[in-house]
Image (cartoon, rainbow over the protein chains, first blue to last red):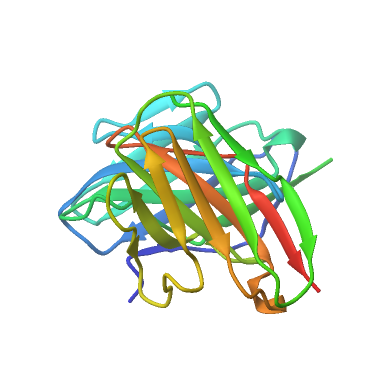
Amino acid sequence: RKEVEQDPGPFNVPEGATVAFNCTYSNSASQSFFWYRQDCRKEPKLLMSVYSSGNEDGRFTAQLNRASQYISLLIRDSKLSDSATYLCVVNGGGSYIPTFGRGTSLIVHP
Amino acid sequence: SAVISQKPSRDICQRGTSLTIQCQVDSQVTMMFWYRQQPGQSLTLIATANQGSEATYESGFVIDKFPISRPNLTFSTLTVSNMSPEDSSIYLCSVTDGEKLFFGSGTQLSVL
């Protein structure tokens, strides 16, 4: 079983749609959780951290469920510019090296 | 967040040759990481570059193929040696603030 699993997609949605991604992790001792965004042939960039209490940044909402060991990312009112790959990253749990999911591809079309 | 300058941004190389990628950070950092991302895949950690000691390589990666230098706390290089087409990939350096990762802009390598 992979340490961090994501549905690779692609998720193909129209502008204005709401889309949600999930990510599951296997190490119950993990301590830090993040969503990164990666555009084609570019480096990953931090989108947002994920806290137990959940956090929201504009159209983006991230949540953590420790009991079920998954994190989620909700994007409301999708824009064309949201098209990218979204990487789930988990850190801690005995290792200082973050673990990446393989990413979920989002395509927002007109 | 750290600002990381990585170069070259891209290169096309002949098989059997070597390419050295450089990363310069605008602040002192304890750990730097080198990742590879093959087409359509997620990031794979090659090694952790340690200042003052040898790099720590992940399973499947060896020093002879990917020698790393870390002469100080703001700079590191990764060399891809004796390249083959299978080495065509994006190579990324990264630093951490202890929790989050920050990446250089990547080196897109194509080996003919």
